[in-house]
Length: 300
Image 1: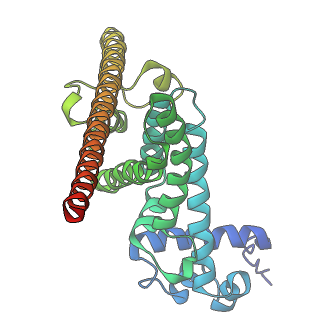
Image 2: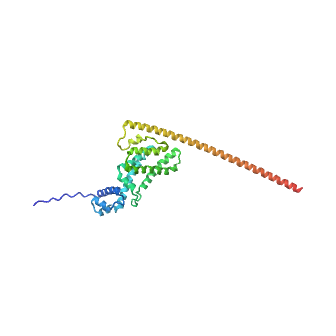
Image 3: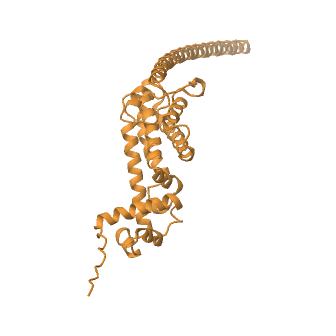
C-alpha cells in the first residue's frame, strides 16, 4: 500500500509576527483606500486569517488604524527633529525640508495615510496635529533667530505656522508629481523661505554641509558643477547677510530719527502749554487788576 505524505504545513506565526503582518497589510490598504474604504474583512482576507484574529490584536479597525498613524507620525517627527538639531538656521531649514521629502519618497504609503485621512479614530494622529508638533519645534528655532536679529520674538509662532505649512503643502503636491527631484525641490523651498520673493536666487542649491549628511539621490550635475553651485551659494549667503545687516542699520537709524522727532514734538507741545499757562496767568492778573479798579471807581 502506497504511503500518502501530507504536505508540510506553513510555519505558524508568533503573536508579534502576526501583529506586524497585520499592521503592514493595513498600512497598504489604508494608503490605497482610506479609512472608510477599508474593512476588517479585507484586512483579514489579505492576511489569510479570520476576523477575530484582527480583533484580538487591535480591537477593531480603529485600533489598527491608530497604530499605523502613530508609527508614521513618530517616524516623520524623528526625521524632522534630527534635522532641526543643526547649528545654523539655514542648515536647519534645508535639512528639515529634505527630511520631509525623503520621508515622502521612502514612505509614500505612510504619507498618503497622514494627509488623506483626518478620522476621529486617529485621536491626535492627524496631519494637522503633526504639523502643529513640528511647528512648535520650529517656533523655538525662529524665536532665537528673531531675538538675535532684533525682530519681535513673540511673532515666532505665527511665522512657524507659515513656514511649516508652506513645506507641508509642497510635500503634498510633490507626493504625486515627483518632479523635480527632492534636493531641487528643497532648494527652491529654502530659496523662498530664506530669501523671500524680493531676493530669490534664480539658481538655488542645497548647501554642501546639508548635502554631505543627506542620503544620496540621483546625481543631476557633475562634481565641478556642484562646486560652482556651492561657491555661488556661499557668495549668495554672504551678500544676503550684508543686505540684512544694512537693513538692520537703516532700521535702527530710522528708529533713532523717529525718537528724536517724537522728542522734538513733545518739547514743542510742552512749550505751547507753558505759553498758554503764561497767557492764562497774565489774563488772570489783568482781570484781577480790572476788578480792583472797578472797586475804586465804585467807592468814589
